[in-house]
Each structure stands twice: as C-alpha cells, then as structure tokens.
Image 1 (cartoon, rainbow, N blue to C red):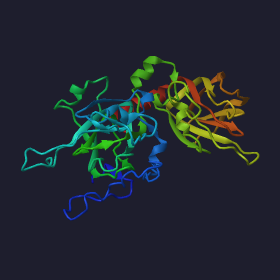
Image 2 (image 1 turned 135 degrees about the vertical axis):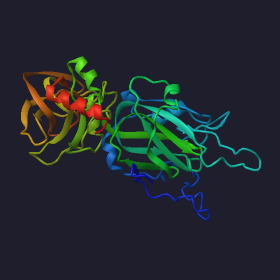
Image 3 (image 1 turned 60 degrees about the vertical axis):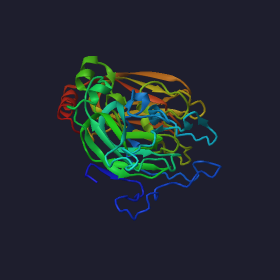
Image 4 (image 1 turned 30 degrees about the horizontal axis):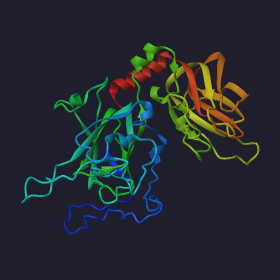
Length: 388
C-alpha cells in the first residue's frame, strides 16, 4: 500500500497467498429480517468533512465502462442503500448500487480474467478540493462485491467530457492502491495527498458491486471566480467554508448548515439533542475559506418547527487566535423561517461561531460579503500551488 492512503476498516484478508480463503471477506448470505443487522459499519474521523461528491454540490458519475446489473448513478445517492430480497428484473437481482457483470477470461483454457482486468466509473466532484478520506460502501453486496478496489484522481477545470478525461495525456494519480475490501461493509481509507482534485476514478478489481461512494475533504475554490462575483457567501462549502467544531452533533452534521440551497427536510440542517444543563448553550464554529469582509447574515430555520433554536448569537474573529467579537447579539429566532440581518459595521473575519440558546437547530447560515485583499491573495496562492 502506498503512503497515499490507509485502509481504516478492519483489515481484510489479502489474496496473494493461494492458501488464503478467497471468500474471507464475504458477508453471510441474507437470512431474512433487517438486512442491516449484520452490516459492518465503520467510524472514520474524516467523515465530519464535507462530501465533495455530494449531488447537492453538483457531483455526478459521468461515465462507467459497465453497469449491466445496476446503474452507476446510485453511487452518489444520499440515502443509505435499500435491499429488497424479492426484487428481480430481466437481468437478475436489482441492487441499489453500481454493479458490473462477471468478467471472463480469454478462452476456455483461461476462464478467469487477467490480473489487470478491472471495471471503472468516473466521478465529477461537485466541489473541487483536497481529498482527506474515502468510504467505499458495499452494503448488501455480500458475495458479489469487488475483490479489490482502487481510486485514482485528476484535476481538470471546466466541464471536461468523459472522452477528454480518458485521453492518454491526462494524468491520474493513485489515491488508494488496489486494496481488498469487505462485503456488506463500510470500507474507509484515509488519504494523505494534499493536492486539489476535480475528478475521481473508482476501479473494481476485477468486477462486482459497490453501493455508495463518499469522498470527504476540503474545498479549494477558484479565487478568480470568487473575485469576479464580488459579493459571495463567504461561508458556503462551495466557496471553501469549513466546519471546524461543535458542542453537539447528535442528530445531524453541522456541515449541513453551510451547504448550498435550502433545507428540504428536518434532518437537512444541524439539530442537537435537548440540553439539560442550565446556563450553558450549544455552538458551532466555522472557518471561512480566507479572510473576508462580512456585510450581511442569513439564518434559516426551515423545517425546524418545534426544535429550532430559541435564540442565537454570532461572533467572529480574525485569525485562529484572534479575540471573539460580537457580530449579532442574542436574538430571537422563529421556527421554519428565514431571517436576514444587516451588520451595522462590516466585519473582517476568518472564523465565526454560531451560538444557539439554549439548544435547538439551524438549517442554513449565509455570510454575505467579499474577500479582503489579503484573503484573495491567500486563496490565489493556494490555488496556484494546487495543494492544501
């Protein structure tokens, strides 16, 4: 395994030794009842970071060499994979994932595929950035998951076609080398490469099925585009905003507060558990992509009707060790309502902290403003180097 990636799942068996059981990573056949009862989940620290392959950011699976049994687009569905034991189609069992046909060898004397045979799917990241971790989820693929997977990445701005991405002059770097995975399990890989990526290629060795793909990391926006726009949402994940920490993540990730678009349901924001300790409150801290000048703020409590925060306050600071300054004092929030606030004096900040009193949820938060000269210079340097 290269230094680029580390498998964070329980160590699967390797298959180089012919005496090893080639089915050691299989899950047991489905025996009825809850299909997730024997699912092998994983706890991966990088999953607090935004999913760069989130469809809500504009990600897509733009090509695959084979999708005979199940469509490639299923890889990026937000909800966990569904299993219906009675659902069959004309091509066989209908699976909620991407599944290729069984590869065969060259002839009757060589029935198995060659060592380098593989299937592939190309994913356009919704927000280009630095990949910190990947989850290859094989839920419900118990005996038909890939023997190994690998993940490659490239960086081509704009909207390149599949043909362009497959051209001989495109450089694909290996983020995860060919590595055994487990069936009906979450297989996690920590990635150490710090380069900005726009597209990934998931490869199945030699074939099989994968239910879901998640690509967690940090957005690296194009500073030229942000400067051209002028006033932007300085906190949006699409523009490089990052969730850093929170007092509570019980029901949903605080990263959702800074996703684009409006919340679609109650769990499409940040909701914490009920706070029982008096004189305390919940909070979330974010880092802007770079230093910015904030002029207006939006707080939206959409779909949070009985569990929105009662009051909120917003503080900002300039620099990781700067003093916190009040931007908006403690203010009443209405449930299921968008709120707009104009700052009396524009604030130069790199970080903000949202306080919820005493607890409760927030669906979205926007910080409207522009990059400072120092912030724009920082982004230009980061973008030009292609590294985090």
